[in-house]
Length: 289
Image 1 (cartoon, rainbow, N blue to C red):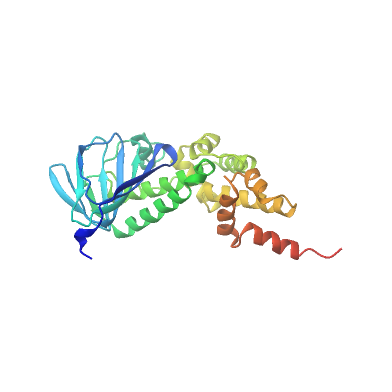
Image 2: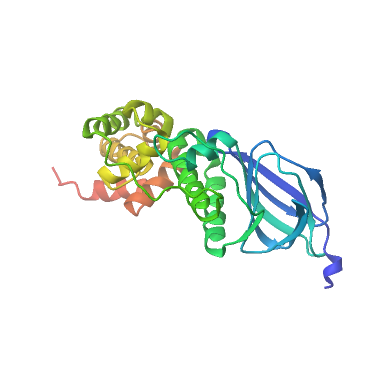
């Protein structure tokens, strides 16, 4: 079949992530964007074909393994580079959120700039693609996973800014300056309010630290980031309820999961088997009366 016989498809899907970030996944066969700009940052990766665009007076061809990076108010256009069209995944990220991922603890949030609108980094592109796919898959449970989603996005953006930003983040890792009492308050907060959705900002307020400092300090003290600790607490509580014979749908809601499907995915990821299988094993192991 000739490539020319491909039926033109121009489609895009959008999803709201945490902190005002919008995820877009698009497949364009023949669509051409007019010259435009965005209020926040655009961080995207080409996943098929060639994405041709003009920015800063130059023309670029973004291919698989390349990032497309637009700063706030940076005008650009876009169109397919070949008759095969192109696909890409991107985040529209507010300026203040990106800045908060970049600044070191104690420093004011500064506007960071990507000096080049196109960079080749296959390893990071694959991380971005996999992370975006995971976040897209978990969108139905986003209201119960704000801490996890925000933490994963922050970690990725911090790495991107260190690798490709104009003002690299300091290598200094503060974290040890946080008091044990402050971090203990955060841990107790998670244990108490595990059934509620929570954000990095919530935990930072409890500790009296900045958002970036909180995550580093907690990870240094407890060998896991806050969102992983929250998931562990939720699973432990779920196991206790399952032992009591509580239906899985009720267990999910009692423990802060969006629904039973969400519980199953997180439980299997942490325990290795589904909640129903774990329940069956627990029943089978009970001594006969």
